[in-house]
Each structure stands twice: as structure tokens, then as C-alpha cells.
Image 1: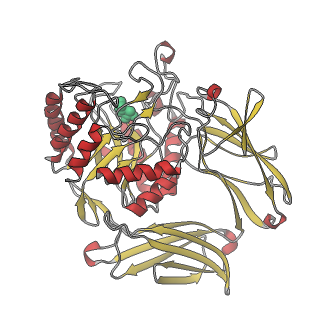
Image 2: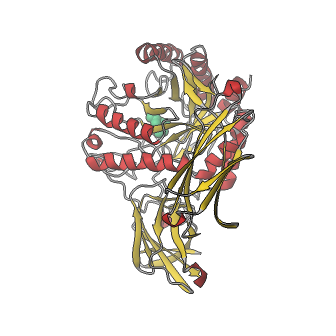
Image 3: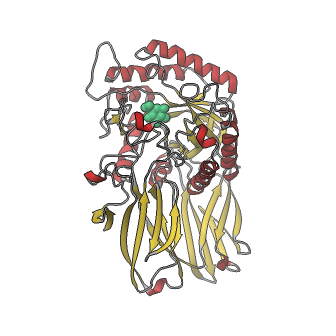
Length: 548
Ligand code: BDP
């Protein structure tokens, strides 16, 4: 069992969960808190490479093995690993992880913005979800031989769906110790082998009659890389991936050369008690509800989710916009080199982690930054270039709410850099409150204007209204289930008539916990499901619209 130390007091704590909701006195705690865990390392590990892998620790940590510092992380929601250099073999070892979740202006996602003491959120988050802390994804000890495969990168963007021709390039990275050994790589029934002469070896496959990964038939191929010395297997690396091509024309997103419209949600990875941890029954449940309602897609707003989410999306045939944890960027951040470097690292780390998932069809570099501020132009151009240089095979977007939520005034200056125009709009909620008819016209005109300006596919990445389950009104009024249902139905119909709208995501899938402020009675109630996953009236409405 892991233990957590707080003010000198040590208690059991569950990991792959946030600390906040496990003990009353930790609810608002920002740390640093000290986690500890003991494990035995057998002598047999002596000639191996041993590393500690952390799926995500929110948000900053320092890792110690037997009292020696072995690594750290500066941002949550993404993995990092530490070489176990102070490991004791044939003995018990102590891992200590000092975790801090203090919101700061420089941190990402950021908090404690100027003026927060006089009426900002509490905790002082500069974003609309609860800032949960802790070891939120399961860490593991990785024990591998010195001759090992480090990574496999599969690219299939040159495939030709109309000819059923799968063109797959596979790059395999190995340790220096593998030089001169044999490597064998296979995809499905095809196999190729060579001697290792470089730390990165490339393999090219042409698969006739390829079984493409489609929404209705998400077929996965097994890719296997093996290092051999004669007949002896030294290391093996297996992944499942799909052959599929994502492209764009000026109006559509194309999956295997056929237009596909994204129907789904922005959501959060959070639940009572576990906070932002990985809770597998919830993942299964959410996918079951996504299928039930007729959705085919979601955005990992506003940070990367645990990998289990993407494994399921690959297997079930869902399309994912994978978002970096960059929410609430503004003037201050564009002038701060540290924030820029953090953003670049995150994008690289995110793409490195998720690159082989066929379900991931697009990268989002940020949610609702102040992209009207002049310096955001260059900032986002560089983030776009970073994403493209890591992965030229997928479109890259930035989710914008300008001109509605910019602080600096003026029109957006950064959206032009992105392949897909993603916008969040709340006509009929934050503006033109209670007036759904006006909202329809305003949304329609706004989308037309955007298309006229950019001539690129548009995704309405957020629109929504709070509804407290059990609140009813006739006529439909704000916060009632009727209002949310009518609002979503009417605005969906507006988007459905426009062929350049490549997707719509309702905000949000389920109600979620936020920091305290006068707009949020404990939760954000824009979910079409409650936090416990019961459908509101709007969920039934969407089911009718999306499954018709
Ligand atoms: C959008 C944000 C999202 C919020 C939502 C809301 O992207 O994080 O939760 O508004 O206000 O601006 O419900």
C-alpha cells in the first residue's frame, strides 16, 4: 500500500487517484505531500535496465529512490520516467515522491492570476475544473534487458484506401547494445528482417487488400518488433494499431478518403472520490453511453487522458481530438520563455505517447487561449510547427473562443495557422441569455463568417447550457432540463445544415466538479449526463438526433 505524509502524519492512500477526496483535510491541499512505497528488487535485475515509469503525477514532483533524487516532472497529465540508478539489489527499496499541486501563474494549467484574492475561484484555478492533485495514473517498474527496443513508430498516411493498399512505415528505436543483432518486424502476416546498424531502423510494408480501420469496423493489426541473437529472443515489443488515413478538404474531415462528421462531446476525466485518477469501470461506462447516444467522437478536454481511453477508442472505433494541457494561456504566458518551452515539451511528449493510436485523428495545442493578443500569433505558429514536425500525418488545431473571451480585445490572430478551425460558442447561455431563437441566428451567421474567412473545415468544439437534473420549467428556462434540451437540439440543427461544419461536440458529456465561484453550485452542470452518468432530457434528445 502506498502511504502519504502530511504534516508529519502518515496514512494509507490509493494511487491512480487524486488525494483530494480520499481525506477531508486533503480536499483543498496543494502540497507538497510525500508519497512512499516499498518494493523488493531481486538480484536477477542486476544486469538489466530498471526504470520507474509514471503515467502522470499532478502536477509537479520529485522522485527519490532510497533517498537519492532520480527524477522529476514539471507538468501533470503526461508520462515521465526515471532511471533507477540508486536501486539496491536483493533488498527492499523505498520510493518517495514529493508531489506539489500549487497553482501558479507560470504553471500549466495556470492559476493565481492577478486579482484572484479579491474574488477569483477558490482554489485559484484559471480554468473551469477542479485542480485535483496526486499520483493519478499507475506507476510501474520497468525491467528490461540492456539490449532492448525503446520505441516503435508506425505511419500509414501513404496508404490508398480506394485501392485497399496499405502502405506502412515502421521505425524501431533500440539501445546501443543492440548493434549487430538481428531485428525482425512484422505487421499482420508480413515480416521483414535485417541486421541492426543504427539506433533507429526503418521498415516499409505494402499490404495488398489491407483491412482499413473504419468507425464501423475498427480493425487492428498487430505490429511486432523482435531482437534476436541467432534463435534466441532477446526483446519483443508489440502494439496494436490500425491502418487509416486522415485528410482534409476545404470543408470536410476525411477518414479513408470519405467525409466523416464528428458527433460527440468535450468531457473530463474525473469522478467522485477518485478525482482525476484512472477508473476503469468509468471508462467502460462512458464508452457504453457514447455508443448509446450515437456519438462517434470526443475531445480530451483540457488535458491528455489516461492511455486506457485511447486503447478503447482504437478498439471500439471512436475519433479523438487529443488535447495538450494548455488551458487559459494569455498575454503573460506569451511573454514568458519558460511557458513556451513547457508547451513545446508537452506537445512532443503527448505526440510521442499517443502517435500509434488510429483513434487519434487530430492534435489540439490549446483550449481557449487569448489568441487576440498580438504575440499569440508567433507563439501559436511555433506550437503548430512543433506538432507538425513531430507528426506530419495528422491535422493540428487550437480551440478558440475569441472574440468572446479574449482579454486583450480585437480579433483572433492565431487561428489562421491551424488546419481545422475549432471554436467554442455559448450564444443563448453566456450571451443572449435565455434566448434560443436569437442564439440560432447568431451561431448561423458566426459560422458562415468563419467559413468565408478561413475556407477550412470548422468544428464547433463546445456549445452547451447548464441543467440541474430534476429542474423543469414550461416555457423552457435556463438551468432546466427543457432549456438544455431545446438549446442543444436547435443549435445542432443550425450546424447540421452547413456542409463545412466537420463536427460538433456538445459541452459537456457529464457534470463535473469545479473550483468554487458564484457561477458553479459545486459543479458545472452542462453535462447531458449527471456526474453519476444518469441521462438528462438532453441526452435522450441527442440520441434521437444522432441515431436517426
Ligand atoms: C468554456 C471552457 C470550458 C468551460 C465552459 C463552461 O472551455 O472549460 O467549462 O466554457 O463555461 O469556455 O461551461
